Length: 461
Image (cartoon, rainbow, N blue to C red; front, side, top):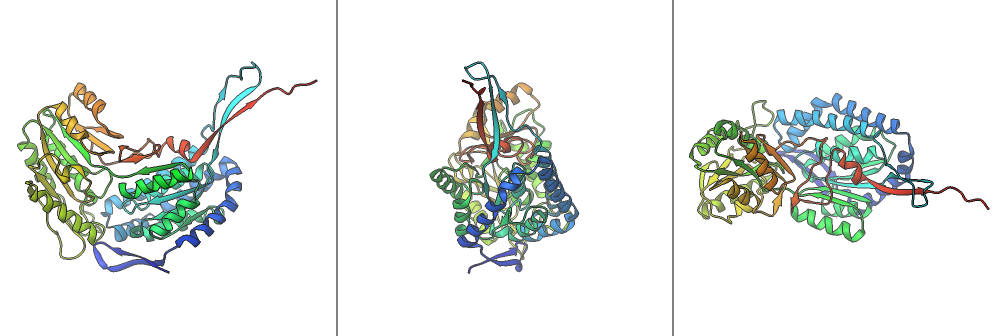
């Protein structure tokens, strides 16, 4: 049996956890156990499910310090962001505990006969297969699992191997308050992921576009609902009236916080008009960011997740230089130990350069110039992704015009591309997403099936 081994990215010699891969047989058995208890869970009074999720929220809150330390150690997330993720996880659980009481359908006008009753009602899908990434090892599993459970489903969670310890500990905290077998955490790689996909009645995935495309196709062949969130090449547009210092400070944090390892991280900055003042401000703001051990409270930029990730960022910087770009800062390793890369800013790239079109999951972004607002929107949209975007301006008319033109699922005005509100729908356009939105009220639509019921009066002879 293959071992799943997770190591500390800032101290790669430290093994955080090593466990056997679940594999196809274990996934099938877990699905069977979940199916045995899921009908009773779905039939339980809403207050029972709400109480269970509230209890999980209390357990996560009580373990906040432990979980924060584990997130820092396993995925290298800076302590401040790790603590924020734990707090967000508690809020997600409490939010969906209340969604249990939302209306489950609607009453409609009687059918064409003029009498009787027509209404809709929702039913859980059955078993939700959740395939999650390492960069938000608590929040993303919970923003999928919490609504799935709230609406009466069982859950099979296949976490990224790099976040195995976080997922296992989270699973312990959740399972203690659920019927035995309703939720299973299945450590593993591609084989386990395929087994979860084959066993599930509804599938939610967050990860790369290459993997997500395959998952979407496999789910479609089985005829099960699927949603895939697959990353982005997110632009921030800086209009001429924007304060360059304020915009630069926000963009630096959005591009390089947690070493740029967020699907909503800023990857391109499109500046309308002269770029020199903003460029200087962005370089200055970036060079103020503290790079170092994520356990230190002052650290903003920790390591990337592993050696291949570090090598991809360094290769992207070198590739940008080879295509004519200029490295304004960064582009090299930033520490002797661990997988650290200095925050990297590139300008002078030609149209079509790889760094402007494909996602590099790490601390690197590019600055480009636009001749006009319309040109900035065109450049922002000239990629295959469409997850998040931001525009900086004090002109309301211009802001509305830009937001109307951007092809992105999440658009912010005078706020960074990063940051997702769990009570609002989340997802992207083009290759960033497949299927319906997740989070907020949209989760009910995904994790339940809508049934239409027509009741006619009984006819008597």
